[in-house]
Length: 331
Length: 251
Image: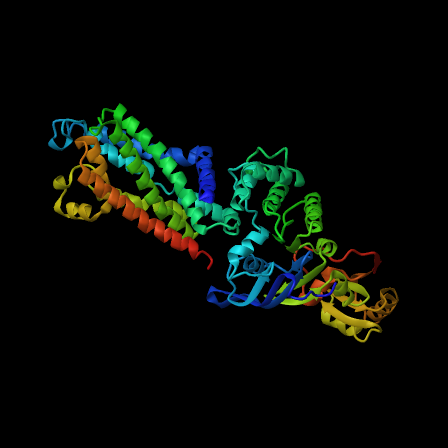
C-alpha cells in the first residue's frame, strides 16, 4: 500500500512539532499521512513522542508548530468539529471507577448528543460488541485490566467515529485479552473506521496494521507497509549472540562477508542482513573459528519488524523478545 | 445545558456512592457545634444580650453550617479524575469545557442542601430556634448551599492548577483562617480591636452575620442582602478563575 495523498486522508500532519517547557522537543517536525479506512501503527520506544503526537491529533494538546488535519478538519482551528469525528482510547484508561459500565457508556452517549432510548440501545449494542453485558451493572473499579480496556474502547465508539485513536490499547494485558482487543480493532476497521494506534507489540502491529511508522526521539525514522519495511532489511537475518566476546572484534572478523547488506550492532549480539542466510552461516562459522571467537548461538531468520525497529533506532523495543528462531546453530 | 445536567447527575451519583468522602466533612461541623456549646454555654447563658434570649447554639449554628458546606470535595474528585485519565476522556468529548466545572458545582449545590439541612436540624434539636420561621430555614439552607458552591470553585481551581491530590486536599486548610477571623464566637464589638479589623475586612464574616440574623433576629433584609452579595461575588471570582483555568488547561 503506497503512502496516500494528504487530500483525502483520515489524518495528515505536516511538520508537526511539540516543544514542552524547558525546551524539551517531544515531537520534531513529523510528517504523516493516514488514508481513510487504514489501520496505521505508530511504533516507538517509551518517550519517543508517540503519546504527544496522539494528544496533538486528538486536540488535547496544541502543536508548537506545523499543522495537522483529522477527517479533513484542522486540529487547532476546527478542534470542536474534530472531536465529533474522533474516538479516543488513551494509554491511561479513562474510566470513572464509581460508575457502572452501563452508566459510563450512557453518559458518554449523552456527551455526544445521543440521549434517551437511542443512548440505551447504543450502550446495549456496544456492551455486546465488547462482551461486557454481564458486567454492565458493576462499577468499573471491579473490572479486570482487560475489561477496562474493552469498556474504554467501547466508550470511544459511541458516536461511530470516522477516526479512532488507540494509544497502547493492549499494554498490560495478557495475550488472550490482547487478541480480543485486536479482533475488535479489525472489526471496527472493517466497518470503515480509520484507526491510528500505538503499540509496543511489533508482531501484533505486523499483523494488524496496513501501514506503520517508527518514531524515535521525536522523529519518524521509518515508514511504510510492514512488508515494505521488512523487505528493505535484506532477505535473511543471521543473529550472532556473543558470549562476552568483543563486539568490534566479531564485527571485524565478519566484515566483507559475501552477500552482506548491513550489520546492526547490539550490546551483546550482531544482526547480519544477508542475501541467503543458510549459505552465509557456513562462512560465518569458518571466520569465527579462524579468529577463535566464541559465540553463544547463531540463528537464521526472516527479518521481522523487530529487526526493522533495531535498524531504524539502533536498539530493540523494550520488552520485545529477539526474533523467533526457525533455524539455530549452536556452538 | 444537557451536558451540565448529565455531568451533574454523574457527580451527584458519585457523592451518594462515596459516603466516605462526605461523612468526615459532616463530622467536623457537628463536632465543633457540640463541643463549642458544651464549653461556653455557661459563659454565654441565654441572658447574654447578643443571644437575644436564645441558647449559644443559635449563635454558633451558622459557623457549623459553613463548615459543613465549605469542602474541597469537588476539587478532590476532579484531581482524581485527572489522575485516572478520565478527565482527558471528557476533554476530548465535543462539549464545552465549562460544563465540566458546572457539572461539579451542581453536585456541590445538592450536597450543600443536604449537608446544611442536616446541620440545621441538629442545631434545632440542640435548642436553636429559627426566628425567621420555616421560610427562613429554607433561605438559610439555600444560602449555605450557595456558599458551598461558591467556595468549591477554590478547590477546583487548585485541582486544575496543581493537578496534585495533596495540594488540593490541603487547600481546605485555607478555610480555617477565613472562618476564624470572623465574629464566629462573639459579635464584632466583643472582639479585640485587631481581631475586629481583620474580621471586618474578611468577607466571610458577612456571610456568618447574614445567616445568624435569620436565626436570631428574624428578617433583616440588609444583612441578608450583604450575605448574598458576598456569596455571589465569591462565586463569580472563584468560578471565573476555575473557568479560565480549564479553558487554558494544556493550551
